Image (tube, rainbow, N blue to C red; front, side, top):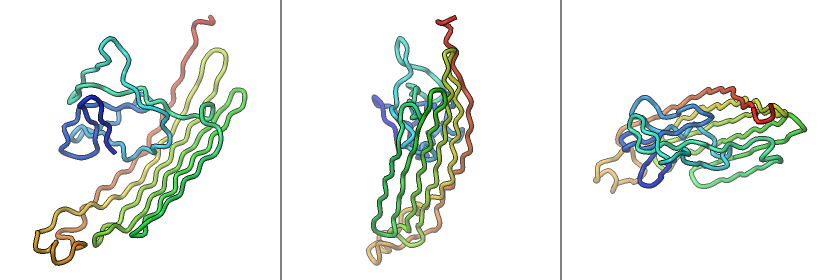
Length: 200
């Protein structure tokens, strides 16, 4: 998944000119290698919106960054109560299940999102799988709010490269070199809060 904004891009693809810094929960998720925006470890159903960093020019200059993108509005038990489930399937044993659940009381709120994806791929020896989870807990009081989040991911993606033209014409599903595997694992935990000084 790429993020494009006014000609700037954040992409998990090595070699893409990276022009956006991406922050989730105040944590920069661009990887040190190539400054790629590692969005594949993040369950998309936890987001409400992506917004540019506010400011006079809405621009933050960092390494390899023309414009930073932040303020990822994340869902919580207060903003997204209820249960959602989406299941799809297709050719080559493709299966995907996305679900989320949220709820809150007077002071406490909780939210969880899960993403499961699995397929064998249309080419030889090209299975891929995605496992992602997002957990969030909030405590709200008159003096402010405390928030704890966890993002867990275990992805194994196979994207075998190009094949010679003669081999492709002989059989489209053939691979030349295998496996071309990308494995991403993530365990990210954050704790944050906000103090409302206007009532003091």
